[in-house]
Length: 354
Image (cartoon, rainbow, N blue to C red; front, top):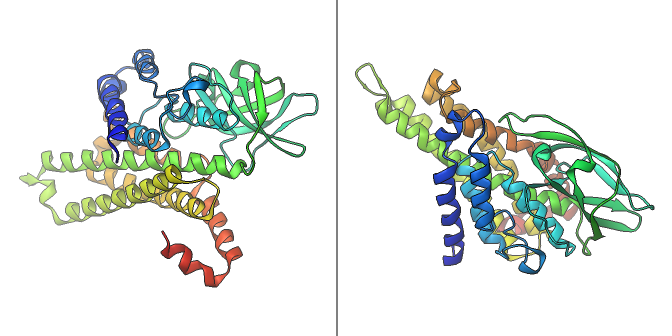
């Protein structure tokens, strides 16, 4: 990682540690921590990391932004930082300036479709939009005759049905009923909904990998503190075996997610290599989230399920993030289609090239 990437990630880590510690958030039932945190993030330019300076952002590289997302995952951050970053990135594809405040992006799934009508209004429904109820604006990828457009929409102009994911964060249904966009412009050539989903899949993979790192740390620390039958439970072979499996899942998720992030940071998100990396990362990280969460809760036992303990902040969010921007089963099918279309003789060269 370059020095600049380290600096950006370290800045994010310090802000999260000071203002978004999991235990502090867990105890604050009124959400008083949110405003100071977002103010600090905005002052550091992190929500608009991927927006160029001439479009109102901080002009950070993709790699620097990915470092921020990894850190956010390690804190299981329950604010729309990743969503605002993705929205800013999407708007930048069409050279649309990003407004201040929280944003989210739509659609966040492969089945939803938003259209830009001939009279200039947006119509359609998008389900499972993260933090739509908390957002001031929504960046929208809209279908139109002859191509795709990218639009900036005021969230208040849409009908939003509030929902929650497993982690207790917003996962809302947004209905665009002839909504007039604030700004709209054609998407660049070659950019499509798959490109948006792939970028979102990489973001969620990094967050899952970060959460798994923290689950491993919590489990190891607890096993070295908890005493049963007059010795620490970390001395029991069964617990050691489980911790080793959790460490393996965490390492595999981190390797897959960072490999995909490196590929996106160095090239276009639409080629076969980027598709393979992003789809594989989302599949592997989602599998690791399921296995890792089960192991962590088994190590901690009943205390890990209580609302007072912070473990659930990581495990439930890691499980919830599996469904955003395409589930593991969706990407498995799409990856299979891509490999089959290339033919059997091209499979090994494609895999070996990574």
